[in-house]
Structure formats: structure tokens, C-alpha cells
Figure 1: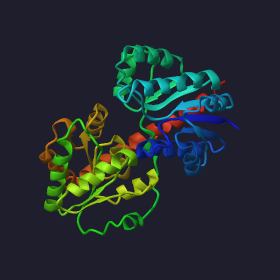
Figure 2: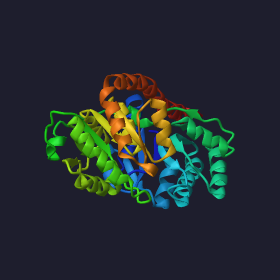
Figure 3: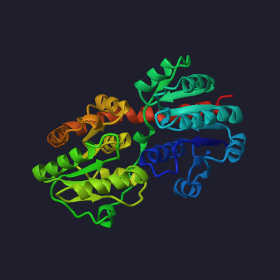
Figure 4: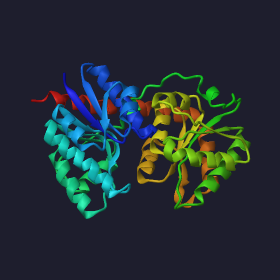
Length: 361
């Protein structure tokens, strides 16, 4: 039975990366149910139990190489993995996995990645050499394709879409009740917030805006930590600073459950890319706060309102964006529905091309 090794930022509790994995495995199982998967994870028992896969520690080189030798293909899963903004060490880690994946399985694919930025000369050189050696590159956006060309990689990428667009919701009507969040007669605004220590004005301006939104529009403010380890604390900080009630979803939930409850909201305000992607997938009007060029590109492509930038955050921009979402809700939902009809088939192409590569002799 064919076996595929998948690597990404898995096991860390990041909803975006887990959404990519859950959606990818779901699509593979839908079209090719006989495959076996091994996922590299920082928490193998949790990953194995959650997704019904074999999972090994992502920092155990002997186990990784042993697993690759027993497998038929390696996928470097979606997300912004190949970049050196997080750290040069992170870039080298994923490049090393790609190189080993090609060497030991015989087939390696960059699977719907967001690529870049890669700034260090050594990182750019190694990225070019490794990416030239893989069998197939699919990227989730045109900016990533531009980065690939800037590296001098001659291989032509295929632009698809983020796998999270394929995610299916998991019904969980009980979630808000479990979290102690009361029913509300007015609009419910889901907020994804993260910490930006370099920009101390961000949180006070956001809180000021949320208080005004709550008062003007009768909105209930609910914070969704997309990466609990990093987002839970700033979410509670924001809720505690608000003069009006704010609620935090503090439990551990699957990406499909988060997708479902986002669909029960009237608008989403996000500072993480996958909060925006999941909102579009759920068909809910969404506005983004720019912290990275990938967010700005996404907002422009989907026609989503921009709620400003973390660098020069002003509460009025946030209030204006939320007002636009609420007043244009019907037209925004129609735009998102058309976008999904285009993006879901593109996301599925990643899996079909991976299967074609797997079956290639």
C-alpha cells in the first residue's frame, strides 16, 4: 500500500496549519482511500489520534529517514514554510526535509506552499538548489511564484490554492454554550488577535475600536485564538481591556469545529491569514489587519475590506471596515461564494497532482 510522508508545522496547535492537514488528508481519503500517511509532528500521539495517521517526532532525524526509506513520496505541506523571517534555522530545517525526502523516497513535492520572503544570501542559494531538485512545485498564490522566480529557480510552479479552502465544517452547536458565551440578538464579530510587541499601539487602538463597534452596532465580540500558545494571552488582554463585554474561546477545538462556529458569526476580523481563509470558506464577511504582505495580497484578491495595518493602527479604520462588512454582508457573501467555486477546485488540484506524481513510473 503506497505511503506518503507529510511535513509541515503540525502538532503546535496552530489552527491554520492543522486546517491545512485536516483538509489535505480528507481530500486524499476521498479520492484515494487506500493510501497510508505518516505526519511529522511536535506532538505525535495527538496528531495520530486526531487524524488517524502514523506520526513521528519532527526532530528525530533517524526516525524521519527510516520512515522516508519505507515510503513512496514526500510532501512539504502547505503554509509559509520556506521563509527566513521566522528564522534561518526554520528555513534550513524544511529545506533539509525536502532534500532528504527526494533522496530517500524518490519523489518530493512542494505542496501548495506560500513561499518567501527569503532574504539571507545563503538561504536563497540553498533554496534554489533544493527547489530545482524536487519533482513538483505547487504554490498557493502569485506572490510566492514571483519569489520562486527571484530565487533563479528554472522549474515552473503551478499556482493552485490553499488546501484549507477544502475544509469541511464539523457541527458543534454546543461550543459557544460550553465556553460560557451567551446567545446574542445582535451581530457577533469573531476576532483573531495576536501579539505584536514591536507595535505597542496596536492593541489599545484595536480595543478602542471594538468597544465602539460593540456600542454602535450592538455587536458581541468573541476572540478566537488561532494559535493558542501565542494568541490566547493577547486575546485575554484585549478582552480585559475592553469597557464592554468581550469573550474568549479558550478550549481546544478542531479546525472543522472552528470553521463551523465562524459560520455562526456575522463578520470576522482577522490578524492571521487562516482566520481570513476560514471565514471565506464559511462564507462570512471578513476584514483583515495587515501584518504581512501575504495578508494584503489575500485581501486584494478576494475583495475583502482592509482594517488597517499593525504599523500605524487607527481605531477608525477598524470601525470603518466592520461597518462595511455589516452593511455589505449580502454582496460580500456572494463574492465569497464565487471565489469558493474557483478556489476549491484549485485546492483539490494539489491532491490530484500529488497522486499523478505518486503513480508516475
